[in-house]
Image 1 (cartoon, one colour):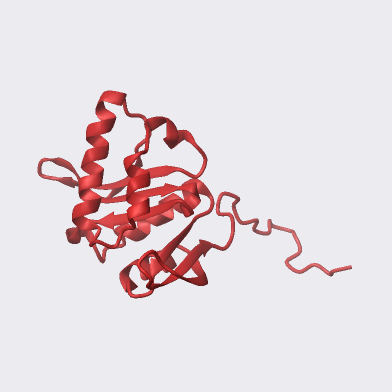
Image 2: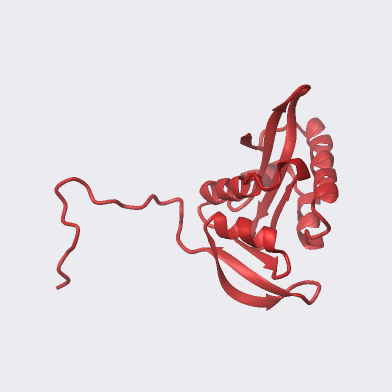
Length: 172
């Protein structure tokens, strides 16, 4: 499986590529994707992909007729405006969604999303990607919804002790 970013598309190709991705989300999103997030993606322009906090990633696999789409992930506003992930049924339970969300987190440095409590597959994907539940709200349809967020900025690498450094320091 290969995760890649969609960012350099000519205006002529953009509309057809975006239409294909929207169709994929409609078909494989299990009617669990928010209307607000889908509308955000619908209005997306190639120029907006260069803005901070916006990312469009696809997971592809090599098939008999070339590369085939296995999953799509779109994030806007670091997930506050939109955080969408959809995976083709043939590639579910293979960590495809987790790989997409982890790639989004690594690419953006921070991420948050909202997932309905009655959606265990998406919750598992988020937890496996390193997100943690930080709040409980009522979602767009009135369902209890968890607010999930990355707890640390993943764009800054963890500082590990170097050889010869003290592992414990005496606070003064």
